Length: 522
Image (cartoon, rainbow, N blue to C red):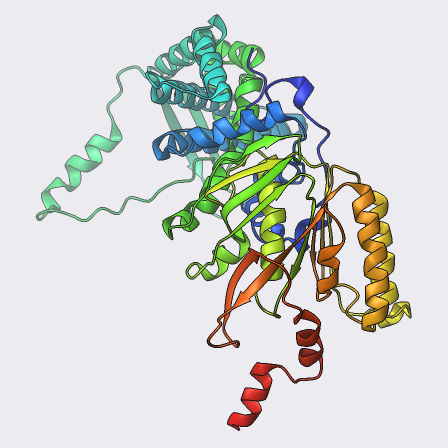
């Protein structure tokens, strides 16, 4: 039995997070996933993007679906179905609101006719999707399971009966013909009386034919069309509703059949198909979001996922939020972490890509645990329980804490939430104190990281932290050897060069190479 396109079974469906994770803004995930959720807000996808999976089976299930949806024609067919079913459910919700409002003007045959129209529309869309999937060899468990459910559903008596009754009603109402007789006057409106009577059509001549014949002699050549489109929903429900009530008294069998149809089939939308129409937008939104990035030649891959941290790596990794902003000139990087290594110390010049590298690391893990493709050429990640970030913030003078105290309070809170399955991304803290104090506090921080057992990336100016122990190694942001002012934005595995703190001080006091060159040029 098909359960969900997002989860293989009920046991793998977690409690969804209703609020945005704290790491979203620091990792610029709000610029990628938040934007998708906003564009698809009618489908209510935000909580799905807020909830990374912690079950390897569920992640693999989603990866297979995401990979299969690389096929544009398959995506187009599912998107058409999803959009149609969503619009249909919206229309049916309006109809139900009308029926439950207690307003007699809406509880009439006009509203029941809209139910029949929606059922006809539903039958058409379901059959159209079945036609698009027929003959396709679907590989993923999720899409294959949905396809099998769909074909079983359209072969069911429930669906066949629905389609047959709609067809019979259409045929019956298409044969109904009637005459309207208008008498009296509407002059002055409030005083005028207009009487409308309705009866079965009995071969009376058509006034339309007589009018066309009368004006035929004035026709000179081809004429322009002056047709106007009328709204689908009548604008005077009281009048149309009353007219249909009279017709129902003349065509008792046909309108009685419509009444029975509405009683029996008012909830005609299948729950599994309705659920699928929403959930598939999770994948469609992702593919729509990354399509432009792919066109600019950047890679996406489907990483291997495990609960082990023995070997974590990525080749050609990059910051997707940045790539969607500048589109060209993106520099990709690699990382390779093998046990017992768990802590990466990243040093190098300012504006050299260190923070971007840290964001790319966090983003890729997050996308991977959603079961989506990741911005890299090849990768292997582990299943984390949470991503915790500590990025530098402007000092809040209202707190009277000072920058250092604020950094330490936030670090303490972060460590209180962390486990050995967490990912911790620390960016340029302890920069507001002296070197000796920063070294002392940084040593305590590293001791805590080592004891905790979490995976840590720490962007810092303290080169000495890279020599903490066997669990720690160094990566450095490179510069152009011939022109130190030029950043390469490449982050490579190598020992620190001992210049990070000097560059930090030079930048702090406006004595960096770039600023000095600028002054000399003036």
